[in-house]
Length: 121
Image (cartoon, rainbow, N blue to C red):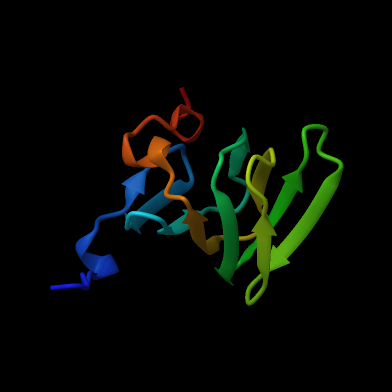
């Protein structure tokens, strides 16, 4: 078999920091993640080698890019933000938000559970 079909509902949401949940699937060269962020919750500034495509399905995020936070984007339902590889960024939910993120390559820190910045550690 060449393909692998999976269902989101068969993959339980992982509770991270208060107000942030996710679930994801990955192949060898890409990853897709559903991220659920409650209004007011913040994903701390972080950086990773993966290019990230953030598609807001519902809600809105304020994304702050750059080491000094000099680039700010409010991304709302139906909008996409492409975050380059190795670009520091953080996010705050302006509303309860459902965000679909695509990463290439896959986030090894997520796969191995080494994403302390999302776990409040």
